[in-house]
Image (tube, rainbow, N blue to C red; front, side, top):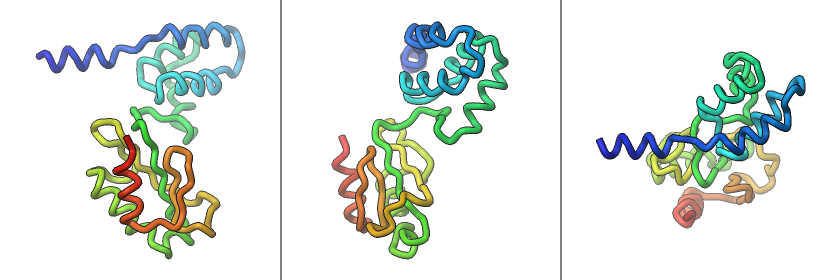
Length: 162
């Protein structure tokens, strides 16, 4: 029971910062995308409560807001990890060992690509080109490009994330 109450408290969002953004866009046609972008900057993702609040305040349907949020890859509807690891599996990276790196990271983290660790420490993603073929296999860890990876080096980098 205590755990349930604690979880409910943790999931309560402060919508005041969102209200400030919504006030800025009040009466502006086509404001859904910039409002979603700024909301995601605040919360790290777009929980249902935020989507519902945006729809109500902008005077549009929840299905319209949800449709925009699910159409664009930049928006996330689930909570993300503090660290984001994107491993390239494009052609050059693939032939130079990306699948082994992905498998090693999945095993180390106990999750599959596209998931977030239960402690919200790491989100692991597979992408299909990072434009750094000369460094393949390559990953982007928290915005930093890391090239010429091998599974052991990738695992070591993940273990070093705090």
